[in-house]
Length: 300
Image (cartoon, rainbow, N blue to C red; front, side):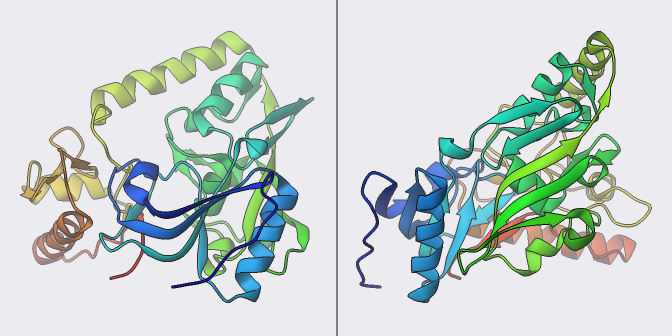
């Protein structure tokens, strides 16, 4: 691809042929033609409008969790959210948070403000924007239960507010997944006042459970598969005898079977082969088709 992008220098940083392994929690992925980091909301709008007008494929990265980038990388532009969208404001029981704000940090801050409802998210390694996009959840709850509204930039550059009924939340789903060219810039959540010590204890309990059950020291992307109806993907994978199964340097965690860890220099091909093998084995043994929760992006 050969073209020049001309944005206001002070508002946008552009990197060419940037390895996306540097920007994902799996530490896997080939280069993007362009990695673009708008430093302001107006810069973000300008980038979206320009890429759309030039018909250049693009998508947004937050912290790069829940993503597997292929070894060939992404042909187009990755827009990385800047610290300009890394904020949180508390107004009574309402939290307004920028799309780049850490979900874990937000859960802790909400607790310090005596606001309950975000405890489930205390261990989800993503951003507010990604959490709304995926309807992220854990510990028996998810974003939809506290979500109020989101500010979204459309590919035309128009900014609009979207409410829960428009996002059509379901298990690990929102309507935004059908239109990847809409970017969340801010979300509002309604929480419930509660004693901060009680919230802190709940967060601590969730953290202790994560430390016991998840392979946190290793590079990974969280749960690989969605839980099937009335069941758990991790239990099926474990019962299929797949804990510790490896393809290259990608391995099914011996601590949590729904995590695939990068033990060193795993490739996307390693991970995809392991995902396929897991699906085949679970289908063969239990007649259940596991559906990936992770998003695969890039050139095949």
